[in-house]
Image (cartoon, rainbow, N blue to C red; front, side):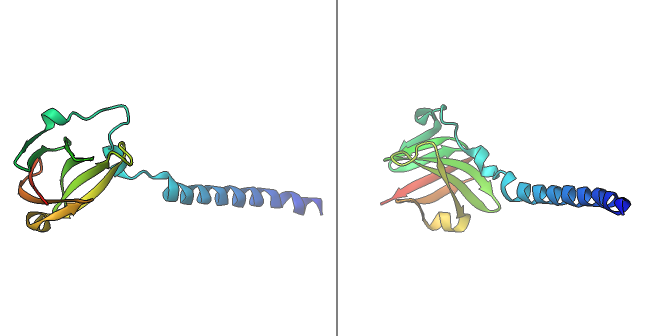
Length: 137
């Protein structure tokens, strides 16, 4: 009778270990992966230089990729194109100056006019490296 109890322990240990391993894998897939857009954020200690990064004239902005432009109380960063869409980050300086809200704008819609936050723009000329925006009021 003692032999039956001892032979059950390896099976119990195996199933408990397997269950914990499965739970760990599911937990990693749920909470362990990091969104790639997290790496696009500007570190809190790094300040973006607004004077060299863009050309402003007559409510038109020429933004280079990964460079910022200051528009009223916000900062807009052009991130390039991705799957036929323009990717831009909006940093609301009064709310959270170190967190960029990602906006994806369809290229056709961008040439007709689009809005980021409370700001309205129209894309004049764009490529993956640069974009020219006209501010609409």
